[in-house]
Length: 339
Image 1: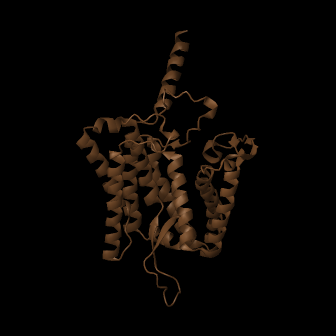
Image 2: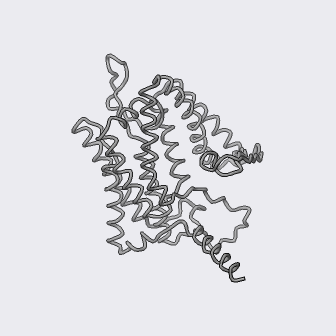
Image 3: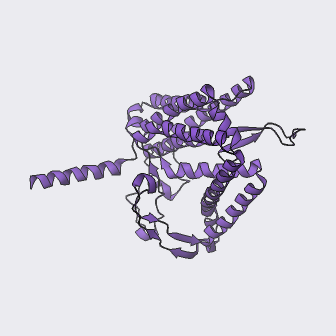
């Protein structure tokens, strides 16, 4: 939310972070699209050479990982007291129009503009080093650095738009996770076979196996972090909306009460503890969303009921501008008809 009393010149205001908002249709289709992608990977691993598939995926994740790590490090380096890192080194506007269908090539034109600061350049060098070390060693710590950066950038770039869309997405993926983990071998096979930062790895023991020479690892899929992360992010913004925080992207340390965020974060933590306990108790892979979805939805709804804000929670939307624009178009069309 923008502070109406903010007198900072327009050119000196920090840019609002760009995020793509999910629609209700996107949330409903997400489990279907995810199932197609998951089963495609399973078929690729089953019918093609596993090493070749992993080589292709490693190259892709290496490139994307380098971009993700640089994107996370650049603001940290640029925010240091030394103003040198904010100095612009290179800027080039690159706009490429295309005639591809939108579902293949996205919107035209492609904006490939480059804008490098010294901090961004240093971040790119560090990210290239981390990615190169990961590709060379494939150590679980490097895997986790890339995976965590993927999660941070994912939560930053996407917004659920409304609480209802978040609930639809979580409920759909609740059944998706149960089916692919308990109903088939697909999810577990893909997770164990793909040698890439699509999961966070945890050592179960520090003693290497006598036969393989490797330590035993447990894994957590990035989806079990990112999807609840989307949900927690919109609850945090709802807390900020309730507290009437002025232009909160300008000061990320602005203090305000966060009852929905803190309660749901605790619910997420307890859901994760339950997942780990059941997994260790029964010695079998568990669909984490089976426990995380009820924990996140239940805890957020509990806060809304206790505070008497159920209606406000379901009415909260981050799509106000689009709705207003749509109303404006309708008014214009009606005006034209009257003429």
